[in-house]
Image 1 (cartoon, rainbow, N blue to C red):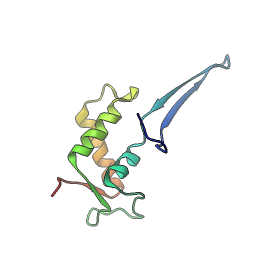
Image 2: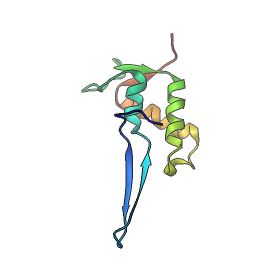
Image 3: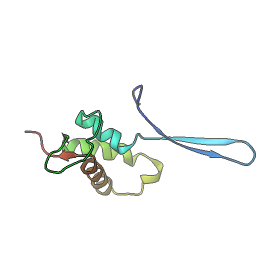
Image 4: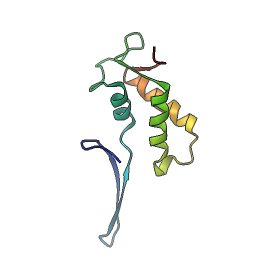
Length: 100
């Protein structure tokens, strides 16, 4: 499902009887956005005027689908998750635009 070196979030629950359960979740949104933009590191000071990269609305949709598969987001509408992805992209200096 995921490639090697992909960071994954893990939720670990330890019970009092020394048993445990864990759940593997999707990669962080910022990591997915940077990978889609082809950027390895975000800028020191993100700016709307000088973006460090670009992603397409299709990439936003694909990232939102990945994030919706998490157990804690199944009830959220896809549009809301996509808006969250756009906000994350904006906060790390990546702009969403159509391909030219």
